[in-house]
Image 1 (tube, rainbow, N blue to C red):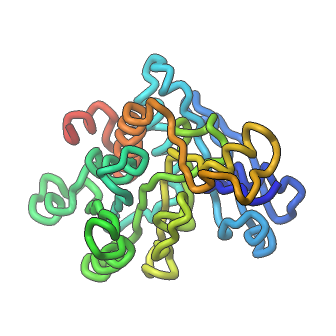
Image 2: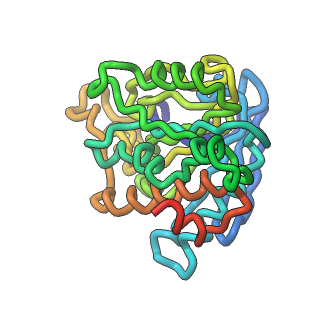
Image 3: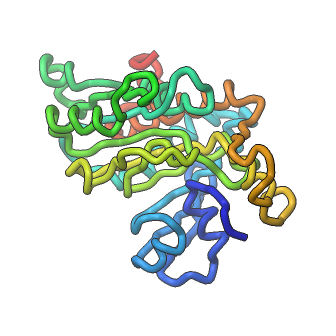
Length: 284
């Protein structure tokens, strides 16, 4: 099948299992399954539609089932997977991409709300010198600010000179089973709006001049891809509603849960000396 829209490298590889230049492995982290896809060659990158780099998809079903310690385990799992991708020193800029007025696009801005911001404290007060400097930006969207989010991020990067950028955004999946249940981490950056075919200014090392890590939650599946997922056949080009996007009816509560997990996880990855309980007191 062709014409399937997905931001998840794991799903792209499932569609092209015979492509060479891709390495995969499965891990278990704090009770959650993680699937690692490493795109090694330009040829593999072209076939999968994913830049060369590492992509990790974490399945968070236990969080949605409200399992015991599910939240803290999810935070620790994602933080543990993100930490090795990060530079060890320097200011980190966390960017929440998306539109606060749309629930499926709220993941990035809400994650910033749950991120421990320390730059102003580290620079001004010696008692906070043991913490890593972290700044955060909820960039908004072109339709509400009149400015591309990538342009805003570039301006802040030029001013603050961070050692890395961590971008959080909503993604698109090819399967309803993964909507609001998984998180993808990547070390290759992100293109805001790509999940809904609205490609914008890419956030990457090439555009910003610093390493860009990304965390994304699939919150939508487009209509044509949904038909292919459910029926196993390609949707006709003339089918009405090809540009519709579907999200779970529990999207509001799931997005709230996952945004909180991502904000805590980023904070813990950047300041591993803290605990989830300490973050709870500092962030909320």
